[in-house]
Structures are given as structure tokens and as C-alpha cells.
Amino acid sequence: MNVSNLPTRLLLIGSAALFLASFPANADPVTIANYNFSNPNLDSGLGYNVGDVPDWNFDNPGARSGDGIINNTINPEYASVPGGSDQFAYLNVVADADYPTVSPSLTQTLTTDFIAGDNYALAVYVGNNSFSGTIGTYTLTLYDNGSAVKTADLSSALITPAEFAPLSLDYTPTDDGTIGIALSFTSTTLNVNEQGNFADVTLNYTPAVPEPSDLAYMAIGVSLFFLVRRKLMNN
Image (cartoon, rainbow, N blue to C red; front, side, top):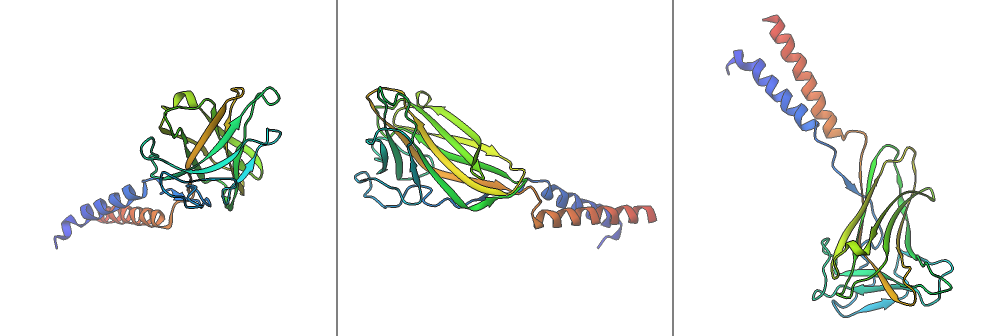
């Protein structure tokens, strides 16, 4: 081994370690029960289920009794979801003179809590399952200890009929807290049956504190830097 090249080699190794440590931490998924609405499992392109969708709550205060939630399959002849889901849930919405603005929601409180300082990215695919289109506004809401802390909206007019589009938001909590999610669809079209479709709900978080592997890379890089410096000074 050529000892004269040792400082250079150590410097290169240390630089590589610091370079690896500089990459952002990986995003990890947070568990959302029945995130792709695959329960109950329905026959592809054929089945639908009117009523409750397991693990999700239906919230429609003050609206007409005909509104509800329906679990359905995506007919590949008409639509597909980029996330790869073959089922979705839709909110059946009808506004009328008594209730000119109707905004039902699917909600879920997660079993995993927020960690202060971590970054959370919530996303869902929304859109149409047919060429007929729909008229309304999709809203994605994130709750922290029961209070809405972040929302994102998307008008159905911006979504091509028979296509689904992503709707997402980011949030960094300052304290630990309970995570809640709401998927809403608002309709103001009187006496018309509208459908707000939702598929593939995901929540990922990126730790604020470096991963142990990142800390190890940083320690190696700093140690080798000072070792090289010491050898050079001794020479």
C-alpha cells in the first residue's frame, strides 16, 4: 500500500460519507385503514356496495337522507387510477332548495400520532369514473388533535372526465397529536345527483431527526476529516 496516498484516500472516503449523509431522510408511510377502499372486495368492473365503508366514517350534517357513501369498482373501460387501485369510494351528493350547498365527508382518526417537527405529506386521488363528468369541489383536510390544520381544494372542472387527479398537502406539527383525515366533496348544483370519487389515500412522514445511518455517515466523515488534517500537519 502506498502510504503517501493515504491522506488523499481517507479524505475521499470522508467526503463520500458526508455526501451520503447529506441526502434527505426517506419518507415512511403512516398506516391508513382501508386506504384504497378495497374492503369490501368487489367484483372488478361490476360490483358496488351502498352503505358504510369499513374504517371510514360518513359525515353529512343537515343534508338530505338520499345522500350517502358508495364503495365501487373502477371499470377499466372508462377510468384508471395512477396509484393502481381497482376500487374507490364515492360520495353521492344532491343539493336542493332546502340544502343548496351539500358537503359530505369521509373521515378517519388514525392510530398513529403526529411527531413534533416531522413533515407529513397527505395525498388522495380524486376524479371521475365515467365520461359524464361531475360538478363540485374536492377538499382534503388534515386534523391535529381534532382541529383542522391544513386543507387543499381542487375543482372538478380541472379534472378531465374519466380521469383521476392527485390532491395533496404538507404539514409539520409543532407538538405531538392525534392524526385525523377528512375527504369532502361539495356540490351546489340543485337537484342533480353528483358523485365525488376518492381512491388511494396515503400519508407519509419524513423524520426531522437524522436517521441513525445518516448520523453514522456524518461521524465517519468528520472523523476522517480530522484524521487527514492531523496527518497533513504532522507531515
